[in-house]
Length: 288
Image (cartoon, rainbow, N blue to C red; front, top):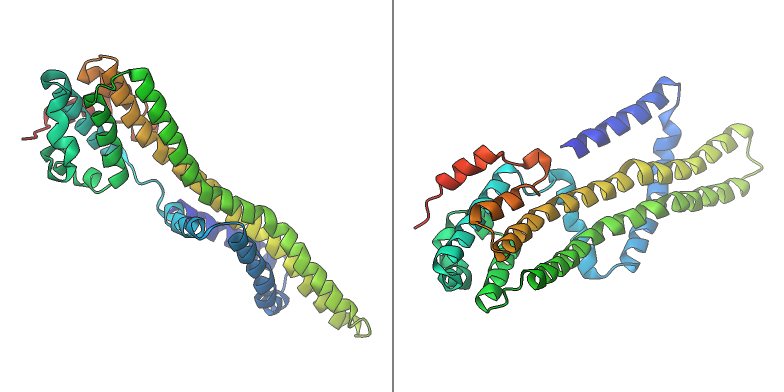
């Protein structure tokens, strides 16, 4: 929502100020379709030539994150901490083998069914099950598992960051592409140098629309979108850091309450449940 509001404010302030200053839109409107075709088309072409089809689709899908923001909120963190508490408590009280029915068939697990939003997130479910399964295979060295989890999370984050880098690359190219369009407009103007000053003035004004459009799109729209997407990816990565923290704390021999509290401390401040709120959620946790 803030992204949409920001874009609206951007257009109102820029074009409203231009209008109040006595600017005329007829030159901009006349030149805009052709300048947008050159600048926007060149930007899209450069984007396609510098990315694989998988990365193109990934970037297009990233626009949803730009508008909606991060997927995980306060209730999501409370749920993942509650689920992890149940699993690590079960492993501690009844042994790692007691986890087998839950991690081998999570779609049939009463624990995962208790939290349908988590169960619907394949990546989250696989991460929890894979590393708890490693514990059952006697790979219980907390430092080793922490290292493996850290490498995986780094890899996933780098992959999720690619759309942001791709958009930033487009933003960096747009001012130069705007200059290209402006130069072509100047070439067109010089070919009509015999025209009267009034005509030449409009032609030069139309050429300058290209420079304006390139800078406007780069620093007003595409660049901020790339920054916003990076922020969303960073925020969502904290959710997986919480999972990692709880599992590693459990492997270090901490009590389930301590392991979950370790994870809670990594929750972004805006979404962190209080100690009392989490305690109440854990007390209300009823899993058959």
